[in-house]
Image 1 (cartoon, one colour):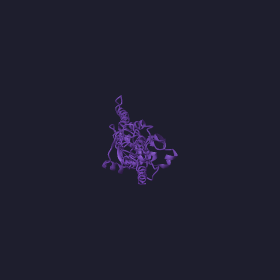
Image 2 (cartoon, helix red, strand yellow):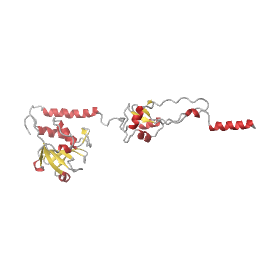
Image 3 (cartoon, rainbow, N blue to C red):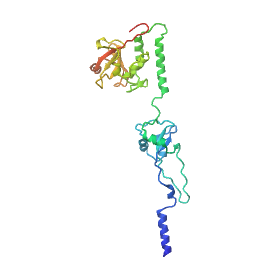
Image 4 (tube, rainbow, N blue to C red):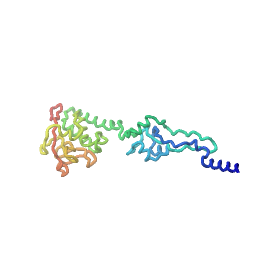
Length: 280
């Protein structure tokens, strides 16, 4: 009877505590740092660590994912349990690729939603490459083959037209995407004339002129989405102006007589434009 009781107890213990499970321990959930390899995606990294893409994005405060930057550090949680064999002692699991041990660095990344982990939308080299031809053309305008002088207003209009069809981008200030005040600032900067960045600031420059007295090169201002001057362009003559249009999504030419602009026009500003020949 005693032997039977012992056998039953052993069988119960064997079923309750299977061999090898004690070695597995709890699943690993502390955040670790993963260093991104070239070409890796969020879904690939999530699969490596047994996470969902949603969990990975939440852990790294990612709202709008783009292409990951090689060498960037992102947080992961390794949740795959360690498998062990009932016949042999459990082997140590292989470390996931490119992972650093939990550290102060990991805790810092966890608290910082602004970690730079994506490739830039527009690399600096590309921006410089797109600016270079325009700068070269401006120089050629200043030094015409015949040697004659080119008036500053003529150069201003030529530069402004060179930028036709550049994409509109709110807050943009490059040839890859530009807004209205950024466009005006860019055109004048190519003539070595420094203007403020916003339409609101530019409206305080120069002399105020009405629509009937506008001259080529004047800045024209409008109230569109705000009570203050919120849109600006450059007057070309014949009641036409050139501007970076959020409506057309590009740099374009419009008429001041168009109902939309006629209703919102608040005035022009004439800057003191002088070239070596003394033209204003």
